[in-house]
Image (cartoon, rainbow, N blue to C red; front, top):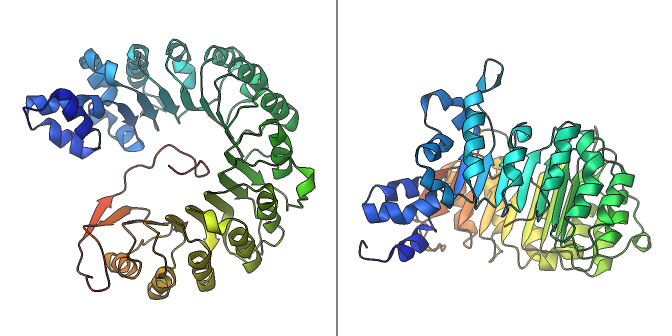
Length: 439
């Protein structure tokens, strides 16, 4: 292996991640050289790192000690920040700013804590930066600095202040030639006037996600989507019960992913009859949906009419189905398997007390390879439960629970139920919202 060209080693090591990369780096000098581009491609700072900040050397401090590593950094992902006497640790801010200013090849930047104001001047000069997800709590002068980020392809703004919201039409006008994905999450000051001014400038937009913005209901998002006819991904919130007439909205024939955030209030049961009109509308557009995600604001039992409309409208083409906070009946699982002949990934609340029936209901599927349990309650699935599901659903290669990722070591059949289950502790989730298209 040491005799291989470094470029070959880099290609091989690009398939590894996490601790495997670290272990590889200790094998030999040539392995260390080959693994560095992948090892330092992404700098992640998680809540766990923030807790141990005083006892560890952060990835930012490592790059400061070895400046030549900055050339390999493509992504920076800050999910938490260490605190000091009630505020953000100043050394962390200084170190991260210095690293960002030296990352000439930076292409994406994620900052979940409220630190964007410290990084704006350093991000302006990153000419290759095309993706940001930030918490945009900015003052007037700081909001103006966003206008200088005029080559972005993907923007995700979380809980932005009114200064940023009012500046959105001007900002999007300056980047309308490059912007393709716009995500606005929990913007309490966003209204239909501002949103329309924004979308009028973005006819080539391919992904629009307007979620948990109290002044923007489903009707506003669907009505204004006439300005973005090329959409392939759409997400919106339902603050009121839908009453949809297909003739009231322009079709989106290229749509491939749909995410619906349903604010249920204080009901004890989700009938879903009126919400079925959403899938009647998308079916009338003639679009081929490959992924649907539905999230209820609270965990509720789901009615038949809702599931029938979803599966009747798009079940035959679905590869990914995610139903969050939706408690399904046994008949619903059977219907999913019957209707969704191409389903590959299924994310549902797994009924822990009735694993054998659940597994039997999914056993007829020959296409599901990933099953995710979105039940946040503890305890999670046991090893025996995971094995029972995999024995019944022989196409499964991965079962994801809130704390573990279970994989098997080879093909499964009813005759061979002695396969080995390989548990892996689930790492901190990717910094993506639940409503973005699956990768």
